[in-house]
Amino acid sequence: MSEHEDTAIFAGGCFWCMVEPFETRPGIKKVISGYTGGFVPNPTYEQVSRHETGHTEAVQIIFDPTIISYKELVEIYWQQTDPTDAMGQFQDRGDNYRPVIFVKDDNQRQIAEVSKKRLEESGKFLEPIVTTIEPAKPFYPAEEEHQQFYRKNPRRYKMEEAGGRKEFIVNHWQKPQQ
Image 1 (cartoon, rainbow, N blue to C red):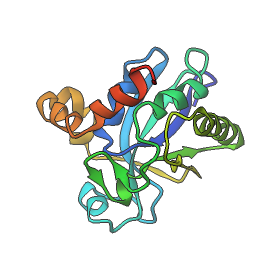
Image 2 (cartoon, one colour):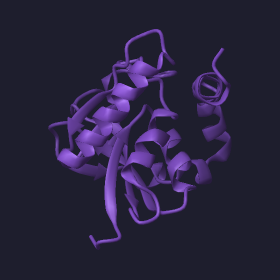
Image 3 (tube, rainbow, N blue to C red):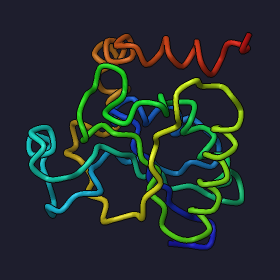
Image 4 (cartoon, rainbow, N blue to C red):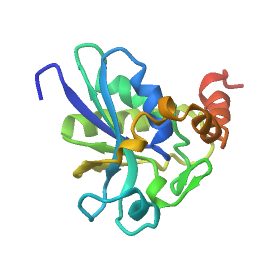
């Protein structure tokens, strides 16, 4: 990794829906869908879906920190998720869809914790913020058919968004709070 390259790992439900919001930003070099947090090396989509691995679906973001900061990525992350739902995101249910910020070092942990505390204190949500902040574990890229899914399967991707994610984002992150 060069000095103009860093990584971030976020889990926020179905990894298909977590790629486009990051990939389209300046400074993002690559967004990889994959699995992390579990105990089985090189898991398959089927294994993760059957809850046999302890992994959660996540995205690994390779970015240029001189263009976009980790702090900015964390702020983008919050706005793609329901941080009050510990057991999945929207129509995707189960521990393999839980929201997690996986941190690779103390600096990322501090940024994530400050951001989470700020969100908790904002009053934006009535329920507690339950997204966890955990040490990064090995990240395993998902099978090729899952990479850049929104581009390869735009119709199915739109159906996935229609499962409550898009409406939640508009209502909680894009509309001014009353």
